[in-house]
Image 1: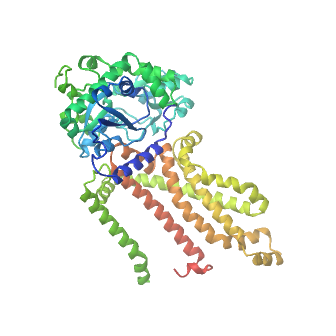
Image 2: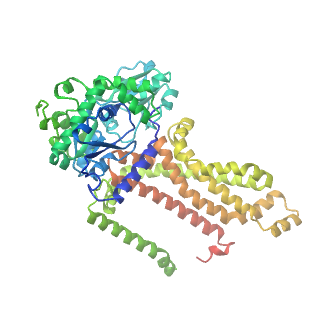
Image 3: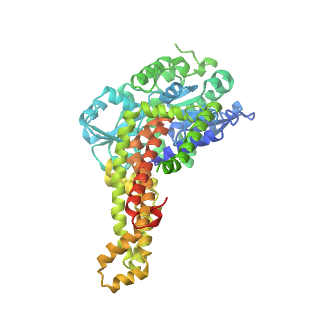
Length: 336
Length: 255
């Protein structure tokens, strides 16, 4: 029940912010700041997906590198546009959004990928006895997803959805709780936990199971900044990585901090959410190359998939989509 | 006739051309990213390129708007007639009719899905809720403004209540009813799009998809389709108004 904003409100806020960005124009003026202030736009409320950011702030990881973090944005914020317009230096988006933005002619790059495995999934009632996404699509029923998300297109391409009735997700699990044949999109840290606590017995299939697995909660900035201000960007990523290290080891205090900012989510849900996301953030790859590291191969795969789905005309060069900040610092080089 | 056509269409056409041209050159000159604000020509291209998506969506939205608006007219008129029967009834119920005007449709839209299920019914309900009040309010104002002298005349000749309603009150109130309809038509389109955000289908979902896929040009194209629908309804009400009132009401005979 934490995702209470309806999509209409999200769109309204998005359009309004878009206009505001256009109205106050002047590229870059807002974010260049001598005092080391660095603005980052979130795409959601404070929840475990941003745990590392709040932990970094809490343990002064930014401060000791001379940076003052300023968080803006929230649900419905057009983060890519805000970064493109220079309203903020950094933002949180998904890997597919980065590719779409590049395809639309902007210079957005990823510098840190929180989730190695995409944390989005489809939640069903366990009583249906389903074992996979393929099972679900064969069984049919209603599926609530946000209109226009790339993975729905991917499902349409790779499965037969003739038996599914696809409806917009209204950011409420009430329809799911009321209908035993309903399935819906979820973020592993939120809806399944809320559904369980309200007496349902949900079962979760990750989107990644289908073969579509874009990095999520990706920190983005402009290519010019990532390649031009390497020290600043490397400092920022190093601070963030330090925060995530702390959060993965013990999320308690950062959760308490976020709980004060987001009263809709209680302490127990924060705790369960942080535990649920752990394996998606720190897998074997992240253990070897550091939390947030990305691989060229994954970006190349995503480009091909998005082109296949007709969402982009031609895949952007994968090496242009991200800047591996390890390359600047001390972490081990990874194969390209 | 020809002269009137020129008088009616030249000013808005000139405004359209000027603002479109200004936007086109302004956006290009300022170098604004197409992600933030697309040029009119980009929007037109998106509209053409995506017409296989936009036109069926427009038809779907139009259908929901038509049903919602028809319900609003029927229910709104009946409620207005009921309220006009006595001051007591009006005082007892009118304040609650206002509820429809102030209900924040965006806030209750998710509930509509739970009450009516996904799809057309939730969308029609949203269109109805936002468009019924102007019909009630304007019709009631018209029904209550009947010339008392004429009312006395009807009573003097022993006309039945129904005859008085059918031959006096309703014709008298017709201009007000049509004013209510003009307002309701535009609101019904807004209501339907909000309904589609939660209930699915139509231009509402096209807007959500285009936002998600960072196709700002397609968002604008879809919004323009919705606006065109509103304009078409407005024109239809005006035509009805002209046709229905030209024999009785002087302001309709001369523009």
